[in-house]
Image 1: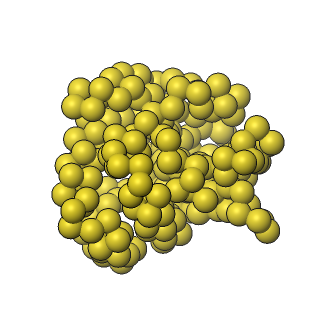
Image 2 (image 1 turned 90 degrees about the vertical axis):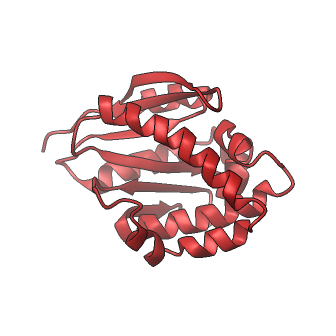
Length: 191
């Protein structure tokens, strides 16, 4: 489902320029991403039919360390991408996220949770699934919600996030890819 949802995402199209190989690599990547979220944060999906997924990560200096990558099946993702795709994918990912991480560190308050993924099946967009997912994310964390942030490469998603309390903290163009990006934050909710 997430591979379909993000197939035309500007970052996905840049990182995986061949649309024929993109679905399988995205599926493997999101499989790993969900496992990582379940281990080191929270991962939710819609009940019954899989219409939406959300992953929220707790703040940690250990995120994406070699130990955590190994424990969450990152090598399977690497093998699924294959030796023809993996090196270029890693280079593109490192460049884009290296730049965006620097921006995030400069504008996101310490201790904020990271809304890593929120995806709704393309056939269910505009039906309230996304609103239900993001509300569940915020409600499940509890009354002492410490604030959260996200990174998006899709301008069309900004009004959705704004309706759910997020504000643009930074925007820019990543130099190596020319991708436009937005960092959005949601203030803490007192208990």
